[in-house]
Length: 272
Image 1 (cartoon, one colour):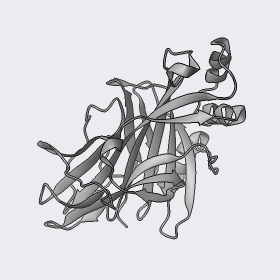
Image 2 (image 1 turned 120 degrees about the vertical axis):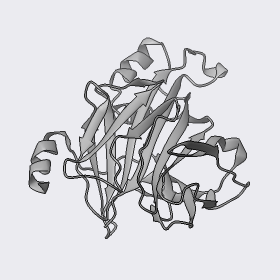
Image 3 (image 1 turned 90 degrees about the vertical axis):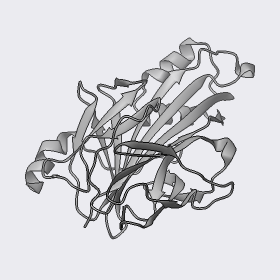
């Protein structure tokens, strides 16, 4: 079955090391599977190849922080400076799937090298952004991009039974397969959404970490339903990433950012 999956998905897979300007943001649980009655802790991380520094919880950087489960949805209380950012959260169910949901506020970066914007646009599959940028009469340096992150993580409490669901984030990745209950012989299926609609023909980047710490990266494209299927392995950790890049409608450098990117991520693990 594994060989058949590899052949099936081989045409859409490309392993490589992403460039330094394409840092991902994700929720990194201390454990993806916790016993009934246990607490949940998870860090916010920024980095590459599922390796990155853990950041403290800062009020001004958080637009929302929630836990979602079958039949429930509640805010997560966090204190300024908490590290990990989600610290000893009492599991809201005795058995079931819990989804951690986090939306950041906007941050801004300034491009001082034209090559970095070109490489970012190409890497995240927005090649027309370069021509659009120049057609707007924008300079090659000194312009700003604002960005916002939308992260989810799947946690199994006890048996981990249940399903992910649409949480209302502006862009999000929804797991259509439960990696803790399977079956996974036909792969893991996810759907990518933007403003409530599916994103067909969108690039999805998959980061896979093996038990020995080795990380591979694969690129996929969603189908007409905004869905993609990829093979997974027991004992491996996964980060799924999809990015939207849009014009801000502002061409005045003094007035603020001229581009805005929205980053959706989903993390989970397959039990060994």
